Length: 443
Image (cartoon, rainbow, N blue to C red; front, side):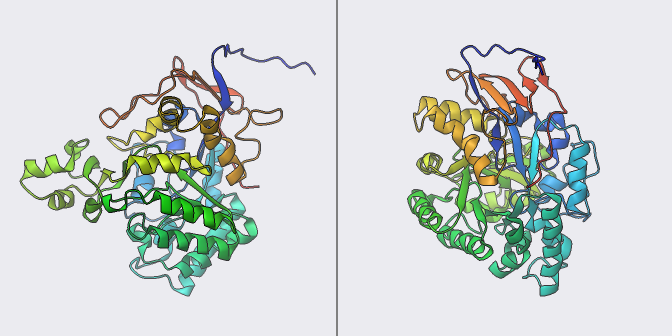
């Protein structure tokens, strides 16, 4: 058979790399909307891992959703498709029917299961409730989910015990799924929280993925040397992976009890006071003549960027051999964290080329081959005969993030083409097209 390409692309002076795999996203809803997924595809992302931090939109039917689950489930600006899925199978079918711009590999979220199964979230689950959640995990794995994520840092799951997480996750063992953990504490008690995640992985005999690994709080700056050594030690006896985003500030819901961890806090959105989006919390507090704690209480429900990390820790974690790259952006924040638009070009341009933290080849591997290996994404993350043609073309001399904390929605520079499953899905001139993405099921 003679094969003829539909289009010829001049790649002179460009790097042709596998499409980037964003291993930590909250794009469960955003994948249904070209406008909402544009920030990812425009920076070279061709596959997203969804359902992180214990938050998934399936199975989920509750009308009232507590934070941070509401950040994903209740987004009002993403259409089309109803966003209540009684089963994971129905969510996967919705993905199959959608005109996707990226490949989607979803996790099922423990916090979402808790909200579904329990009438009181401020206590451990009963054996009967655990059995219900375990049934949903089993259904999700049979439908093709890639694993179970948890977010015991957040109030909906804070009361969950280690035993609860293990027992809910029992179906992962036979299915060879992953346990993906937003740790219980990324501050003072981070080593104990890591030990809990490792224990869950050992008990279930599955791979543990530490989400957006970092150490927060001024008093913990520099402790990445301890955490990375703990990961190295654990990896000698069990499969362990981790991801990181290339910024020294985090972003999540605004909660007064989080303020002490950060040097400064920036408001990303607020339902009662949308006019304060983008403002620094201390400025809002001065304007209102109140403390930052009281200002935060007035603003909630709201989102925030917390300047709580040390740049040297960020660089140390990024450079660690086993670290993958994940963006952790929220698509519908009024003033989003710049990681939504700039994560992958920032690694290529700022950290690899400008700072020389690692080679360009290493940077690409952290975004492609390494996550494909860790998650078992067959035929992804490589440029090879027979592999899926997820590709990104970029100029190694000019690729860089342009989004920053002042203007966080500016597209990256230096990326000329993004192909998903062999189809050109994005160019800066022609914008984004849909239809080439696929729902990926765990084999």
